[in-house]
Image (cartoon, rainbow, N blue to C red; front, side, top):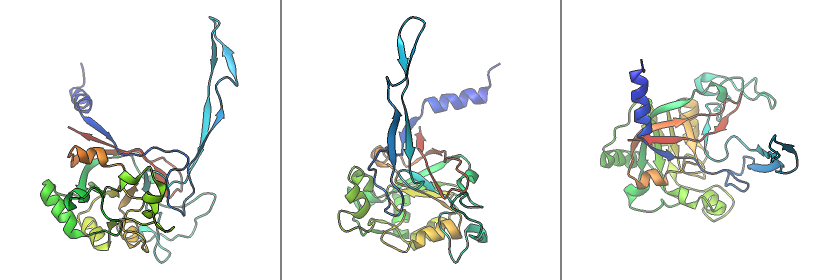
Length: 275
């Protein structure tokens, strides 16, 4: 006898619209200057090693290798990514870390697969612009007004995504990283009051379409507050353009971090499922 609950779940998933919120990875992908770049190359080309099938046809395989930082491309920040006064989230000391084994606590292997209610707050749309200016500060008033206009309520355990429009610069490393000027990462994002507004609502994670989840350049107080003080994960370098264009503000957010022992971050390919 078929499992009715499973059949209902499969039917619901099969009828959902799927939005890919991750970016492509390729050599030259924009990345924060303090993190290593993404490197890719073939390690074996087709035709180098061949086998003959029973019917005489010739088969071959190709293979490749990658090397990357864990905070390159669309990725999640683990709770061990930042510390304050020598302490990680929950008061855990930074002692015991090593280059070989990473962090003794809060490694990415401790982050379970994410399947939660997702909310998109489109701040660029709220401001009536294609893309927020590079020095735009997102504050509580923007989050509150976006919720009001979109008829959205933030709930405990949510994943809240902020759209700045910055993903439209993604093919251009200079614009996406430094807004086309200088060498320091530059871009719009929430400041500390907005971070506190979100954390007060008990969310699980928050993310944006920018390189760093806060207005930069800065001393990263938003990272410290959310990761160290409140244990809220950050997801960066999201592609929110298609889901925003379709006006989807509430959805099922799914993402699976890699189980890298001791890691401070991990690449992810998040999706949004909407009905």
